[in-house]
Length: 285
Length: 305
Image (cartoon, rainbow over all chains, first blue to last red; front, side, top):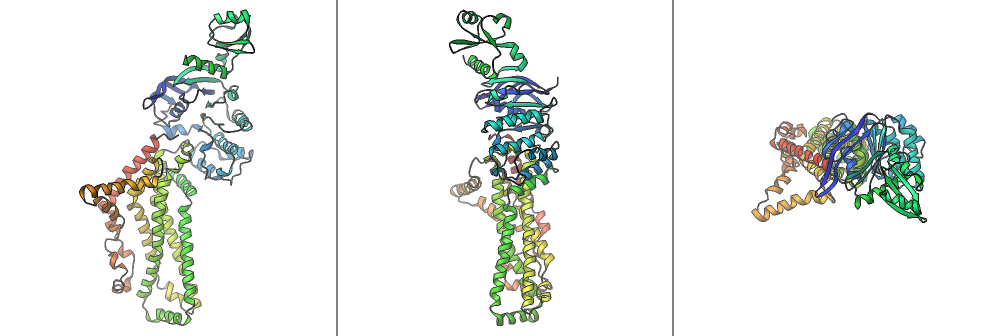
């Protein structure tokens, strides 16, 4: 496996506030990593450090470059969508394509034109004349026409309706992602991307609470739906979180094998959202 | 650094259409004004016949050339005033608007550095806008010469003598080009200051650009009862080293024109060598470089998102 992003003891302070606190992680090639955290957790700051938009303490290498000092080289192999509103409203679709074609060495104009033909975005239209969903389609078409090694998406579907959100991720998976490409994504709509992810990272108060592949997640975490004696026995094994639903206890276990929990109740793989809530609550105790 | 500049400057022209719409609008207004004057003059047929006869037979080449050069200078001033306003407003908006509409995040997602971007805006303000202004001046001059020729011919005059035999096109056009391009370079410290304010101000960049010098000037006057600071800024406006050999006060005086009627030339009033060897030219470029570096630094390190 080749490591595309390598962070060692990365920190970032804004005055007295420690937005990112001594985090270390790696992102391998061909993975889709979901970076998940509550508001103010440090997700965007960490993404900005990866994109070279802000400097940071510690060692951070992206595609072998120091992202802050070698931004130009980095940007030739990396793309990002910060949110849907960042495309300039005054520009025409054809102009933005002309601009990217002139500036980006890895941009394929024919590919972008091809992708836009599948949408209702007209080349002569100005961005301000497009709906929010169409702006996203335009941005995604540009991004997908760039032969980049790393794609960073920060809340890319914010403010879009469910149809556009589904279409966005479907296009991303079907027309863009392959084993040569890596995607780093943050979103509040965890449920929608859960099935896309190969890896997940939870961040809270600038610290990483969890960094795991989705495969390892199902081995490490088990949810037990139990009642009565089974629930009491399960409780004795020390769940990291417990909640009640329809008179049954739902307990989340970490690092306890399925064999140990067999017979105590119904065993389930926890959703990323449930796991996220449990880990955040655990961290705030 | 240079390879991206054509695309970045083209981007500026897309975003700030006033860069070419303003000179075009002035060209149309000036031409309409000239047309109106010609139509007005047509109402005085008798006087017109005398004037055309006099201009063609009694006046010399020098006087006709002086009249046409005076007309050229007059229309060019309108463009120069517009150039000043255009440059100020463009420079103040160029790095502010991208932060305001958050499109800076998109521009910074492309492999163009902050230095390339800021320099493209400096080049647009200091070179491209003046160059487009020069084209506007030339085009207006040419159109008005053609219009006037047609009118003169229709009124029985000889346009070949009155207009085309008397106008100093090369002299006028070259002088206009030198003046507008030199003005961009001479005013570059102000342009760089506006760019810096544009990338630094959180709101109302126009206020942020003009208030500090005014406050500094007022403080100087209150404390020392002197006005060196504002006088220095104000004096730069007349581009003295470029017009070293010319007395502005005497430029339009009739006697001044009569002294050298046979050799009316705008270029002879321009001291290009004196301009580029003047310490004020180089110190201005140095201030421009410092403020541009500061603007690049602020764009690079500032986090507005």
